[in-house]
Amino acid sequence: MKLALTALLVRDYEEAIAFYCDALGFRLVEDSDQGGGRRWVVVSGDDGGALLLAKANKAEELAAVGNQFGGRVGLFASTDDFAAVQARLINAGALFEERPRREPYGTVAVFRDLYGNRWDLIEPTDRGAS
Image 1 (cartoon, helix red, strand yellow):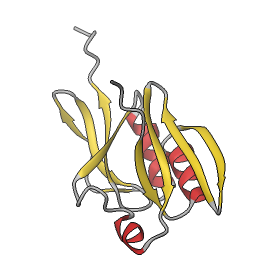
Image 2 (cartoon, rainbow, N blue to C red):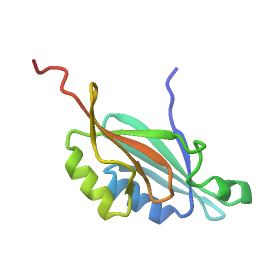
Image 3 (cartoon, rainbow, N blue to C red):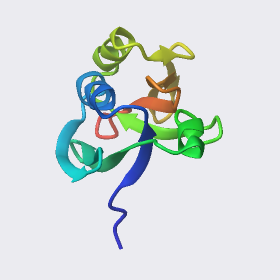
Image 4 (cartoon, rainbow, N blue to C red):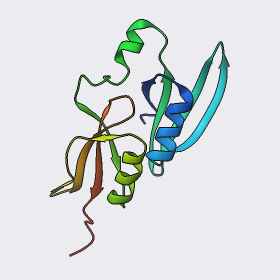
């Protein structure tokens, strides 16, 4: 069994694609028109992990945009260049809740994306170095 996609509610397809691709560095894998204003929009990281960007339409969906994880960190992004990604995210309007901190597993900081979803940005410790 393989987890294929995680749906993420968004307000607008274009702004979501711009943020997740340009600021976070994901790539657009698919953007297919499904008719009636609906699209199948998938963005992915380099090494797996993919989000289905689902445009919220109903009142309960709109209310959940930015709070799909009840205020917890629910998404995790890993990078080899923390400083560069952090700068891109800040430039795109992401809000970092803290300064980067060193943990045994690497450098990490919590940020909020353009909708308010909380993410961990992590630059893992190089396990191969001694």
